[in-house]
Image 1 (cartoon, rainbow, N blue to C red):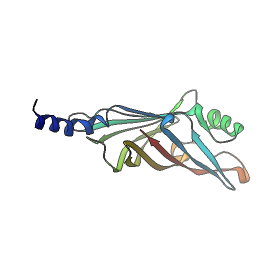
Image 2 (cartoon, rainbow, N blue to C red):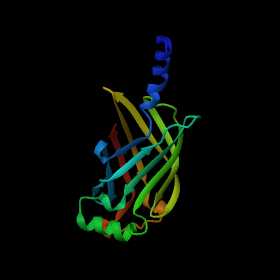
Image 3 (cartoon, rainbow, N blue to C red):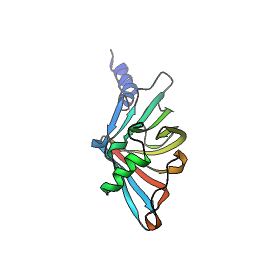
Length: 178
């Protein structure tokens, strides 16, 4: 192989290798945010989550899958955690919150990526769009995004009474490096 062909191969293949069959977990960053009640906010943290990105097919399409373990959602209050997992979210029937998307992304590039797909919470699936910002520094990629989840969109009850009543929004933020 001559030098010209080698350089062409490196320029073509290496960018694709940097974005091939990636699995991102809580070891790579955080997926957390805030739940809201009438008088206060409370933390919401997914301590176990997985983001998987497939290799691109010949058209540059990839499958993106996000899974969040209901058993490993935490709110900073043990009683609220237990109530959320057993009464609000049926962790036995639906142990995972999932998001699935197909995206045309032949290679990883700095900028905004829009993932249109389906979010499933407690067995109810709805169309949902995630917008991620990708940046690269010192050979590592960083993906960030903020998301709003509306519990009643998934037929989840707004539990609590008086000032403890939960509001119909959960703000989440993903920040991972790979």
